Image (cartoon, rainbow, N blue to C red; front, side):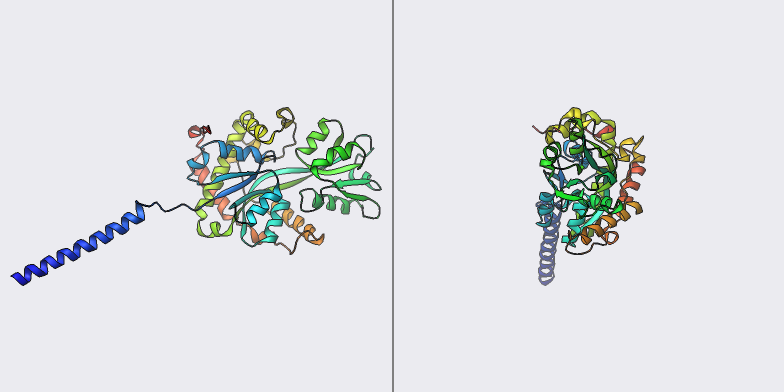
Length: 351
């Protein structure tokens, strides 16, 4: 009997120790020390109209939380700074136009394009008094553009090729966006390849007028490790983008004010900027689409090829191989199934 009691006591002690270990294990896993969430820092440009209003909405409201997204947003003045941050691992997602996105893909295999952000125009502006009314009229004159991995440069090269303009018959000059208006006004160039909001500012001052336009596209690209290991977080972020688009449609004055305040852009001029983004004409959240279309892929590949042929890329980029089409489709399907959460959206107090 004594032996039995000793065995029984030993069994009970062993059981208690085992249960304690299990409890401690569960406690460690679920409670005491919360497992850190995967970081998702999204870079964006404060002065990029239309895209800026969408990201301002995500940054100023609780929309990401409504879709269980842990995304945070880091603002940049210029695309190159964001590219550097992405390549250096300081951010996990980028919102950029097609040209800098392709530069990012060429520099690193660690990035995947997951959805369309906006459509936006790039323009050719003819100087007032230059008698230029079509792109072909620029032949024999001085054409300025930010040369390099800027949104307008591949577009200008394409238009030159299409209209028979060459280095022999037309002078192509490197003109930065910061100096573009002054150089154009002083006659240093006769025409300029540029994007918004510079195009609208130049026209508002009477210095020049747009004579040509091409649709470009912006994308959301995410670090490959997050796409591979946490695709649900990417879907949550894309769902947030869809809701943010719908918020911008319904609150244009408020979102324009957010954009104007941070970018120091004239609110009056903001209403004159060319907007070609179809989502801003949506009648319901079901009309919002962030899918990447075959036309988007073809356009992006054309830009990538032009950039490589002109020495702007270290290697060729096969755009279709760097795109994940499934995550945006899943996000759109989820939002259409559940409907808009607009009645639960509120503006955060950042004081």
